[in-house]
Structure formats: structure tokens, C-alpha cells
Amino acid sequence: MKILVTGAAGFIGAHTVKALLRDNIDIVGIDNINDYYDVSLKHARLDWINESENAGLFRFIKMDIADRESMEALFKDHAFDRVIHLAAQAGVRYSIENPHAYIDANIIGFMNILEGCRHHNIDHLVYASSSSVYGANESMPFSVTNNVDHPVSLYAASKKANELMAHTYSNLYGLPTTGLRFFTVYGPWGRPDMAPFKFTKAISEETPIDVYNYGNHQRDFTYIDDIVTGVIQATMHIATADPTWDGKAPNPSTSKVPWRIYNIGAQTPVHLLSFIETIEKALGKTAKKNMLPMQPGDVEATYADVASLSKDVGYKATTNLEVGISAFVDWYQAYYQQETSK
Image 1 (cartoon, one colour):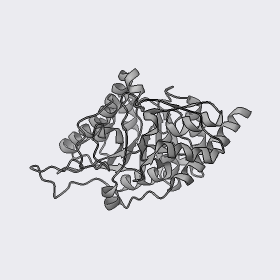
Image 2 (spheres, rainbow, N blue to C red):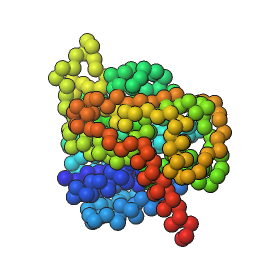
Image 3 (cartoon, helix red, strand yellow):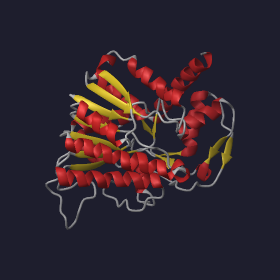
Image 4 (tube, rainbow, N blue to C red):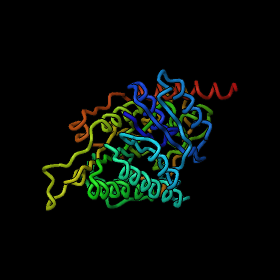
């Protein structure tokens, strides 16, 4: 089997490549190594991948998914069996500052992925959606049967658009597609723009942390290993049409065509202040907190209902928060000690 992994230098992408290499799978990874955050971390992730026992099965190509000609050549030059599409312009708040980046990467880029899959008979496309699509929905836990027509950020809207675009290709061309709505992923090699990383950095350096919504947020923090397990399980479980789907009472997560949507999370929402306390305990330091109001584009709580993913592929998150945060803090301290000594 040969798999294309987009966003291979990213947080989830690098972990996914490492896991696939352990299964002796031939992988081509692409990434444009943009400067949305520290590019040295992205290069370090690639070095980490290349330390793998089966690193000879991995080939990295620097490439932008929004580059139509390059993407067409990529699919033409490689006989991929499946595609795991994790490349995207991430970040809710940045989508308010730089909306065009989200159209380029998340809409045009996804279009190029769909076209590549369509013209080269890909067995299965698995792609990253987001819990952000639930937007203004307040029904908990978030279920894939909920309405997701009220996004509160352009990032969320772009991810909802991906789900609709995928359905169109599943319908028109019979392309099996599976969208995974990720819930607040954290762990070693995580993104510097996300709360676990920002809090750990600030507390370590004894500088104040910004705590939005006065700490009343809840997030379904999900450890990276659990996410990667679900991604691979979903990739190996090719999407099929739902024989029970009824156009008069449509299920929003399945279809009469080979298209599926799943939540992938820990199914355990945690209050933000409790999350900070867990980091404090792992670091042995107390945070200095700036208590601030809610930010534009943010949502108060996320909570994943993963019943359908569990039923269809056997998914189950197994890493509790204390274990996951301890692993992240250990990595953070080792990585930055190494970087400082260079």
C-alpha cells in the first residue's frame, strides 16, 4: 500500500507518518513548511520521522496543496492507494486576521486533493475536519447528527465546506471519503499556537498566561496517540454508502453514497482551569493568570460524541489527561533544552 499524507511536517501529520512507518507502509509526505508558526519545529518533526526504523519507506516533498500544477504532477507520478489529507491553514483566531490564507489552503487546496483522487482512482480519501464546525450549536455532547450550519469563524466555515465538497465528489464520482472532526489535539511535537503549548511555555518562563472567557471554557482535550489511532483505523475502513439512509429524514453524517463524517475526541470535556492546574502540577510551577473575556470566533465548550466512530472502526481514546500532559511537558522540556544548547 502507498499512502499520501499531506501536512506531513505538521503536528498530527508527523505522528501519523511515524505510526504508518511502524506498519511498513510506503509513504509520500508533502508540506509547504509555511511560517504560520516556527518552521524549525516543522523541520525537527521531519528529522524525527527520518530517525524511524523504516524511514526508507518515507519520501518528503516540499509542496503547496494550493499549487494546482504541482498537485496534478504529484498524483500522476505516484500511484497512491489512499490519501490522508491533514494539510490546512489552521487556527480560529488567525482566520479573522488573514482570511485569504484559509481560502487558498482549505478550499483551493482541498479542491486539488479531490481532483487528484478523482482522476487517479484513489481507494479512500480521509481528511481533517474540525470540531469548530459545530459553531453556535450548544447541544452537548456534539453529535455528528447535529446541524452544523452556524459556523462562528471562517476556519470553521472552510472545514464545513470541505465536508460538502467531499460529498459532491462521493456522489458524482463514487470516491469514498471520510471526514474526521478533531477535538483539541495535544501532545509531544504540538503546535505553538495552541493552549497546551502556550500555557506550558509561559508557566515555564514564569510569564502570565491569557485565560479567555475567565477560565469557563471546556475542551475535549484529546491526546495525539489516540487521534492517530483513529485516523489510521478510519483510513483502513473504506467509507461505504449507508443502506438505511433516507432522503426524507437525512442523517447528516452518512449518505446514500460512500461518504462518512465522524467525531474523533476523548469524549471527556475538561474545564480550562483544571487543564491549567494539570500543567502546573507537571511543571511544578504556578501560573500567573490574566483573566480575560471570550474572544471573537471562539466557542465556550466542546464535547465529542464518538459513538459512530467506535461502532464502525473500534475507536476508543485511552490516554487520560494527567498522562498526556506529563508526556507533553517531558517532550517540551527536552526539546527546548536541546534547542537552547545548539
